[in-house]
Each structure stands twice: as structure tokens, then as C-alpha cells.
Length: 491
Image (tube, rainbow, N blue to C red):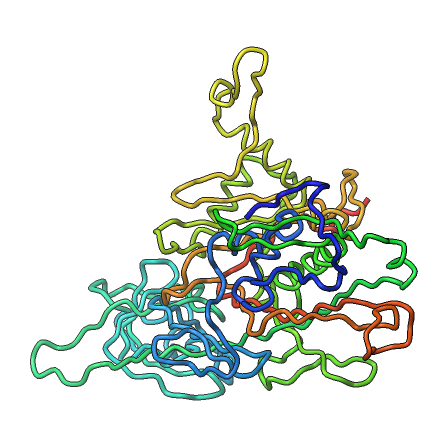
């Protein structure tokens, strides 16, 4: 998408209210993110997702979930989406009613030694009799003598033995504390007259995405309207694609309104907090008139929330490598097999990353652009790749001017903010993140007496133009938040 600028491009003999923003954006919800991506510095996330095509297509209100479809429109502001179960599961040790995660009556220091059967307690019944599970040290394995038996809320009791041929082997108790991981690895049965077999089914489930309603307007007085005797309205043309079929005029006043709308929508999509309780599905926020204020979670607060990574000394080669190492397991391949995570950074954080990238083995000669006296050393980097994991970086002016606390090094806490969003598929093969909108943008004029219409909405000598947006995001990714802890670094 590009903007064609020019002071001579005006709309003559037309009222500013008679030109709508972009026809495609009004009648086609799927096109709306493209409209907002004309402000890539204010709306970097929407611009990126639009560029990659990560937005819903053809989702309409009151359309059920058809075979093979990913979404179900429950209402005008609520969409359900499929969540496929991962083929990689990890169960966890969980305490029983007595606070025990394992019980070996013969020895609590050497559980399972000499082939003794003992009890463990897990948070699911996924593992069954004759299964073998691996503990968190990557070495110790347990053979399950029984199926899980429910003993208390969310806890199952198992009879197990240490697997292997070393009679003296036992389980280190430090591998079986509350929350420790255990994973089904294989299964073993007798060779003669074996019976049974373990049965498992993963049907997946549904997640809920709620849309947020936002409103904006611009207005004019009858006097101001009269001062424009020729009614020339300056603005810009917006063109999407290589031809002129998707081309429309964007009046200046309307553009200013849409900039504010874009900035607000970007914040809601990225960092907005949802108001619907996940357990009872009830709206928890009301206004002064006790009306429900329904809104959906932004990417930051969808799922279990972000992983936080401290940036104590700014970006350095060491911190970049450490970050990518820590988040490696959360970044899955996209449709092309590429593993990418996009980071949206405050301009100061972005420049710090650029300095770090310059130090990472890049020679000066490879950075020279141009000839003769026009040569420039280009030390701007779009990202960094390490171990097949690509980190894309974007400077966001939307982060500039955000509230922050003064730190002891003279910087502000907000200047180090960066949010990373994986761009790959989920374990079930769905896109990890998609913009969603059910109905087109709604807009119209509230006509005052200055409009000259036979039917007016108000006697005021002035009119206004209103825009209503209803958008959301479906996110099944593990978001990463990078920043500096203000509480421990105050001036």
C-alpha cells in the first residue's frame, strides 16, 4: 500500500461529509486492517499482520462453524475459534490432601529403591498402566503399575516403580516437588498373554475472542463551513495493490481522526485488557450508568500472559543470544517453515538493538552503500537470526511518549519496552495470531442546521462525522515482554 501525496489533489465542489474514508474498508471488514496499515509507525502490529495476510477472511455474523472452518460467530461481538490439542504434553506433580507429591512408606529419601512400588500424585490421568514416563532430569523413568485414581480436586494417584535394570536406582525427591514436569514417553507390556492397552483421544476445544467497540468523530461549525467558499477539501489518495481499482480519497480531517483511531486500535489489539471473565463469561466492567463495557483481550493478555525478559544494560550481543535461547521453544514454524518473532520497540530500545547488531561480527566493508563521495555506512538492521530463529525488529512511535518512571541511569523505564510476538503456526496448524472483524466500519454524519437538509438531527449550527469500529484479535501465541524493572532501578 502507498500514499500519493500532493497539494493539488483536492475534491472540488464536494462537502467534506460526502466523502467516506475508503469504500472497501466500509463494505468489506476483511479490508479494514489494510486501511489502518497506512500508518506503519503508529500501527506497526496491524501493518505487519496485514502485510502477511494474518487477518480473517469471510467471517460473518450469525454464521456457524462449518466443517473445516476455524471460527464460529456467536454474536456480533463474540467469536469462538478452534484450539487443537498439542501432540506434546507435559503433566505435573501435584500435592494430595496431605500435601504430599509422592509417598514411599519405606524411605522418603530413596523412593522406589530396590524395585519398591510407591505412590505419586499428578495433575491429570493422561498417563496409564504399563506406561513409562520421563522425569525432568531427562534420565529417570517411571513404570506405571496402575491407572490414575482420582483422590482430590484435580489430583490423581498412581502406583509406580523405577524403570530400568539397576536394582539400587531410586528417584531423587527433588524431581517430584509441586509443579515438576513429567512426560509420557513409551509403553511396556508382558510378551506372553498381554491384555489391555491404553486409549487416548485429543478432541481439542474452543477459545473465545471478544471484540472491542471504539468510537471517534470530527466536527465543524456552520461558520467554518461557510468560510470555505469553494468547498475544496484537501487530502490524499490511498492506493492498495498495483492498479487503481482500490483507490480512494482520504480527506485531511478524516485522516486525522483515523490516525487517532489507528493508534487506539493498535493499543487495544496489542495491550488492551479484556473485561469478560474466563470462567463465568460475564462482563466485569461497567460505566457510570451501570452499562456493561465489553472488550476483548489484546495479544499481551491472551492466554497465560507474557514471558518477561529483563533488559538491565540495554541490548547487547549477549542479551540478544540469551533472549533467543530462552524463547526458542515457543517459536514455531510458519507455513513456509520459517521461525520468526516480531519485536515492536520504543525508538530508544530500537536504537540500542541496532548498536548491538553492529557489534555482532559485521564488517564495515559489507555495510558501505553508494559510490565515491556518496558512500554511506549503513548500520541499520531489520533483525537478527540465530540457530534458525529469526528476530524481526520494528521501531514504534506509538511507544514514544508513553508514561514511564525516571531510572537511576537517567533513562525512563518505558524507553526500554519491547513486545515480541511469534508469527508461526500453533501445534495444531492454525495461525498463532489473526486480526478479526465481523461487521464493517460504521460511520455517518450527525447533521446540524448548517447542513441545509430538510431533516436534521440537531438545531446546532454545526455538524459532526462519527466512526464506529468493532475489532478484535485471536492470539494463541506466547508473547514476550522485554523491559527494565522500574521498581529496582529508581533514581
